[in-house]
Amino acid sequence: MNILLYNPDNQVTKNYMPHLWMFVLQAVTPPGHKVFLIDGNAQHMTEESIAQFVRDNDIELAGIGAMTRMAARAYRMADAIRAAGAKVVMGGPHVTEVPNEPIGKDGEPRHADAVALGEADDLWPKIVNDAAAGQLQEVYMPVDESGAEVKPSLEDYPKIPWETMDLRQFDLVAKVPKWGRYLIEKAGSTWKSLYVVPIESGRGCPYGCDFCTVTGFFGDSIRFRSNQSVIDEILRLKARAKAEGGRVAVFFIDDNFAINVKRTKSLLREMIAQDAQVPWVAQISMNLLKDEELADLIKESGGRWIFMGLESIDPASLKDVNKGFNKPDLYGQVLDRLASRGIYSITSFIFGMDGDRPGVARETLDAIASWPPGLPVYGLMTPYPATPLYDRLMEQGRLTRPKHWLDFRPFRMAYTPEHISIEAAEAEVHQAWTESYSPESTERALDQIKHRPFHERAVMFFTRMAFRGIYFPQMKKRHWVGLLWQNRASFLRIIREGLEEHRRHRHGRPGPPVQGAPVTARSERVAA
Image (cartoon, rainbow, N blue to C red; front, side, top):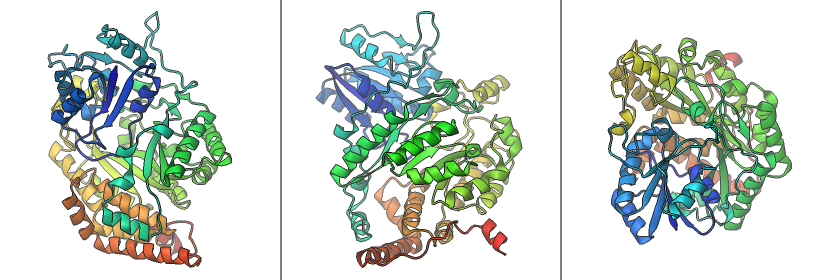
């Protein structure tokens, strides 16, 4: 049987990092079946083109996973796949939250033949076998004989064959235009490929933030893979990249990579000892990053960027959403600790909380200005189904669009906050994105790390250009041409410094001395 695993695009940005669920399910597919993988974020397909793909490859079963913001798109693609003759099974967080919706039992049209609820690692082999036998059930649930939910153990984690897998749709070097590759080569890079690959070392989160779906889906009990299982996977990826003359980076997609600090330290020590260092990114709560030894190990093992859900600089707002463990007065210290080691932060903020008032963007931007440079991202408080936030707002009659995901509008609110209007909250987000990613802001970011190694400035510049696209449309070539023209001062600076770095390496000359910490408003005040 030919099987398609499809992840829909999010209709906002292009994301060239693969979604892990597809590779896990491929690894646990029973033998005798051929599995095709398509991630719509990297390989855009229309409803017509995916239907043609189904027909051309004689697809009999399609698995579609989607988060809430992708649900409407997932349903349209599922309809096209079913019309082309394949059975569709849908799963993932959104389907688990509203299981009757995709199978047409809540008044909406039917989009799927079956749904898989919760984590599908142990369900998928049965689904495939049932489909092959023509006995596909409508609902698959991970429960035991008594009806109790069963979470997959990660102790016997499936081996994903990264070394033999076709990853061309995710090659970042191939996405760079020819002139860009020329400049990269002139700056000294000989990479023929670059992949950012997702790896998980554990699942679950005990925090239970009001607005988050993670605890509801993965549970509040943390399950870990063995250290050696994670390291073996990294070593296979490194071997593949070396054979291709390319590079690989890893995104640890654990919802909180350092939730057990002792365990995380042991994993990072083993990565260092077994030469499994790679550039990596992870999500870690800021309250866990006060540990100096952990920060040292992050650096030595290859850590480059840490995603932190700071959410707000107002302690009262954080407490309201059950995230009082975030301490805004410590944000700057944590970010300084990381940046002094060449580790930068992706800081996430949510506007439109009940405690927010007009001016929240200005207050947040002023705080960010005193921190090391990074990648701030801003969103609006979004009530996802089956979360405490959604249930509370529904009970209070405050949802303006109860099924907002069926009419997906990025950066648009679905309820009315207590102290700010919907329009004002959306304007605050616009202001924050505009100022954070203005050409002037990017120039300041590069100035703050002018005494750091060149590669840190180059990565800072290009990631800032890319992250801007989360909010502003820049999915077409003309958008990028205009963006680089607006940022031409910083762009030309990076090119000039890159050429100087290349000449320095070619002639064996040492680079300038590296200072520990970036220049920030805080450090300037201390120096004064």
